[in-house]
Length: 190
Image (cartoon, rainbow, N blue to C red; front, top):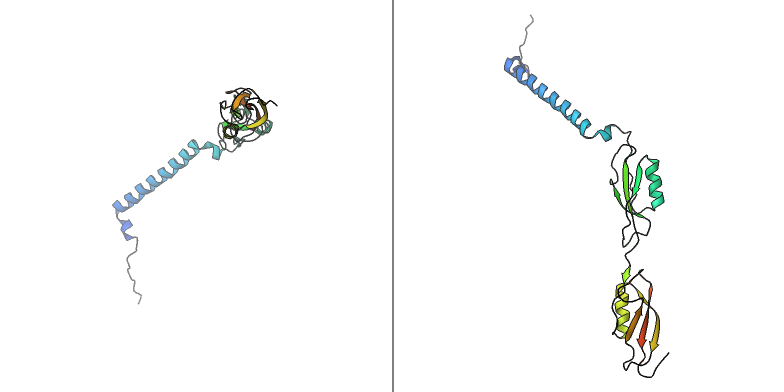
């Protein structure tokens, strides 16, 4: 004789209508979320989906010609702005770009570049009336060095700076020489 055993299924609760409706509604909500997420990801980030547009390269600190060549090779148009002084980037190299690197943009987009004019010129400080050793320290701190030192007689106190060439306040490239006229004291002329 055969006997049939009736065991309850672990999913027996799904036989009830309200559980089936709840499972169906959950499935619809989940499907709507997945479709909405995929559509918004495609809409908001088309650059990663449509890889036909080029990415703006990093051209900072490259020479002007090399930066222009890289950008035009990718199909961008290049526009140069005014020069800006920069303490560490050499003259003629790119110090600023807009749009920034790694942006995905359509071809023929204008990329604006600003080129370095080199470091700012050093201003000649006022050292007139200072003793030569102090004047040397002040000039060194300003980024210039002492060039030729001419001494003139007629002043009672020797070793005092009487004039600078170029004059005080003028700009010079950093590291350039400044000539000094120094008092040699009474009766001394060289």
